[in-house]
Length: 281
Ligand code: NAP
Image (cartoon, rainbow, N blue to C red; front, side, top):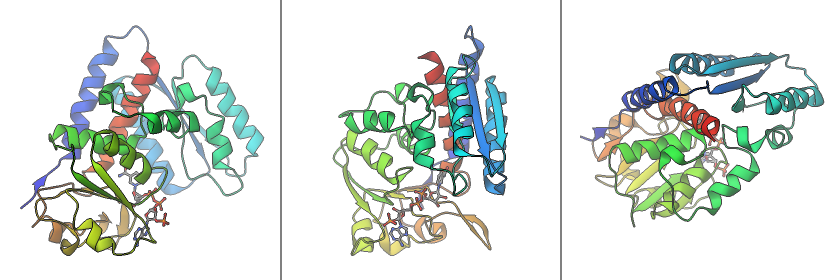
């Protein structure tokens, strides 16, 4: 049976460390969350981010804008936040309503306050790294950084190992692959056009699933003893499930993350870490 990688416990540990550090600072790190419209899932995410900010002693601001807001009005809000000295991190909850251009919106966030690390400047900085600094000092997208934190916590050796990343999104797949590469793993990325995906994934020492397809990864796609990190969050009749068929795969993997309670809580912990990092800079 695989050893469980407990994201909830690790997230709690990170949040306790942040709380202590915030208490010793002469200022309060501040996070602004911008929510456009009333998407129920986004509302839940924003609420949990606000709650986490308060719990560690951050200043937090939630800005709720009507779903029909014009792009220039949204940009004005962002530009004001860019200048607000109380705010060190700005997060625009995605997805945005269709009439808004996400790229233009992200490009207008000051890279020094880009807590989600979606701005091209920060993405470029990450891409150019040949080695990774200590994760405490690394500005990287929250969910991918959460994955790296888990691997670090469980002392998973990445050097020279074969890592396979399922999914190539800018949000998850690509940044995870970049960071694994900077840790000297040999990385292969699979996507919806990949031929023989099952064969490739079955060769992985480290398998990261981030495709958004419930229970997609079966035990035949996993090497015995592999480390399996399930980033997927899918709503199904059984509630929230990952991209990995947990019941099957836990029998042969060496390590596995559950859903829920795996990568999800790490995303929030790393959002707080990034806010603190930007505030200290
Ligand atoms: P996305 O933008 O939809 O990207 C999905 C990726 O998976 C794409 O690269 C796509 O390939 C690939 N893909 C889709 N179906 C595939 C298939 N049948 N075989 C192989 N590849 C396939 O999704 P995302 O934003 O990266 O998110 C991925 C998952 O992570 C989702 O379940 C999401 O809910 C979850 N997520 C979790 C957290 C967390 O905190 N745990 C945070 C964010 C997202 P193409 O590029 O070829 O289309």
